[in-house]
Length: 184
View 1 (cartoon, one colour):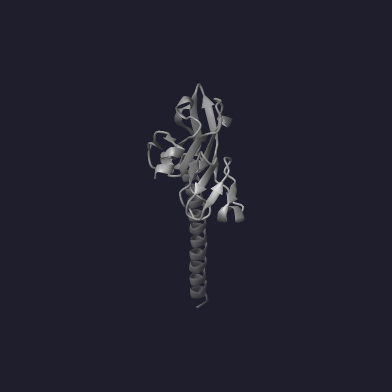
View 2: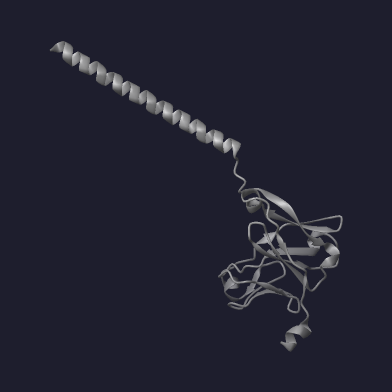
């Protein structure tokens, strides 16, 4: 009878040892597999890249250029002065941080305006009136660069890299004329 208990005890011990070894191997190889996949398919979520907007001469003071980034963000680009450097232009999100309404440039008032709750932003994107000013919010700013008279914007490339190449939506500059607004 003692031999039967010893036989059962050895089988149980062997089973437990084998199970522990198999579990350890599975965990080790699983971790190694996950690390290999992450290494081979690195995340592109933080990738940024320069996208062409327009020739600097195509955008004059009083005009704005609506732009949609490859990831879908709505941006408005405006010329602030006559020079041909990046500091003569500004690119701001055209989405109000208060409730997500569309913001547009009003050259006659020298401001970005959100009609939803009369939110106003100075030319640098800082809130000056309405609920955004009360909450000390500002429009998201996008870096710009000028090379050989060409204007570029730095944008997230997640949609470009993640879903295949997409064409960014760039339209013709919009001229904001005060006489057009008075007629309407």
